[in-house]
Image (cartoon, rainbow, N blue to C red):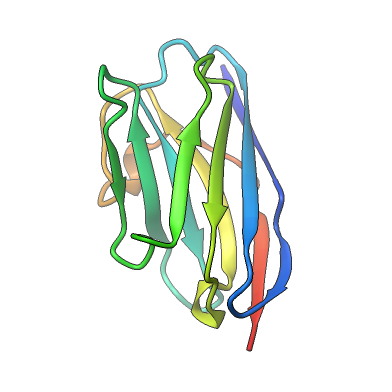
Amino acid sequence: QVQLVESGGGSVEAGGSLSLSCGILGDSVNLKSIGWFRQAPGKEREGVVRIWDDDKRDTYYAHFAEGRFTVSLDSAKKTLYLQMNSLKPTDTAMYYCVASRGYYGLSSPTRFEYWGQGTQVTVSS
């Protein structure tokens, strides 16, 4: 069993930065896809970034995240980080850490069987 625990959300002005963390508790050895989704009020959830636990640690960012967000996974696969820079009001959302035992992408949110409780990010203009 796997439990995901996010931390690091908060409020920041536009242009600022926040760093999110996701503690991966339990059996993380067999996790193949780990990443972040977000959901803003009144909007559908959307993928932010995913990283695969393969030889290259293949990473894919949503278009809005490229160049501003950076994901990293520690070698023990126990903590996932998301560094967010140049934040915009449109980045305001609940951010969820996700994981799966298979290789899946951001277009397949239902394939991620593990979800954290979420951490709120609010960016003011």
